Length: 107
Image (cartoon, rainbow, N blue to C red):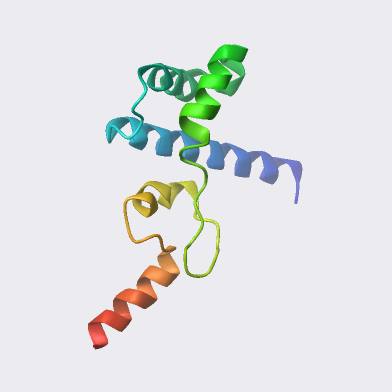
């Protein structure tokens, strides 16, 4: 892959991760006030803007509680763009969810 394509992919993934973090904030999923504030800073200014103490709060208050999920059926990593729905849904990737929905319709 070219460097330009790799950079574009990293940027897209970061934007999806920030959108996921915003969904966590909007849904009141982050229960710690300090972690909420640090998450807002990460979204606005990036991880590089955090002090070591803020990094600790973000790691333990957000990253460890909301890691990138995997499908409970096939084990595929769920993209950040689908992660919020995954943690509040049935735990399936979009492909397995589609198969499950089709199976339930045919019953």
